[in-house]
Length: 208
Image (cartoon, rainbow, N blue to C red; front, top):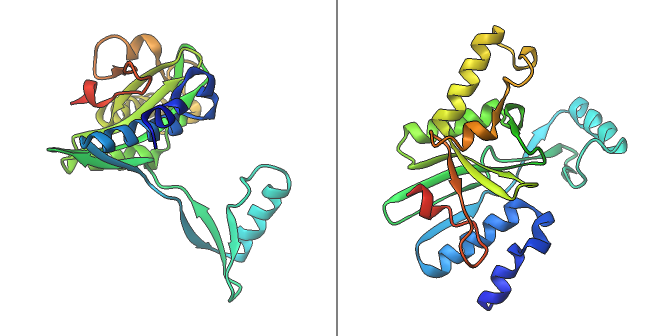
């Protein structure tokens, strides 16, 4: 595959095809250069009860459930496709990485509700175990800007919110359950990622 063919997936005309696809192209580039081997974690299958299966089927008929997410084994047992807590994991020379990719159409805020509690726990746990880059890669699609939110920053935001609401995200005051663009670009814990001249999000340049 030529470099032109590889990098073309990240041209501005193809941005609608998803942030994850852009990151996969970045990781292909890293792999070709021998600087890092980062892969996208595959979805897995989990057994579910007949009741859960029936509920999922009803949601599927209403268009509230993604196609291809349910299966039935030869012995009749039901299964559901489940997503890994984090999208990407891997490492390079002297470092390891574990992060989830998020995208928002909002221009000024990234809602904390876009981060599952289990995802925050996963990246925090990885960070405590020595993973050098653990957190969330967030793209503001309308602005075409990307920020990395470290695990500790995500946990601190959630803890502050839970303290304010007495333990529930849904009871948060408007504006408090999100990261503002001003907060992310203030030069604190969050780090902005910029495109390389080839159009790829070269996050290693800014996070290592």
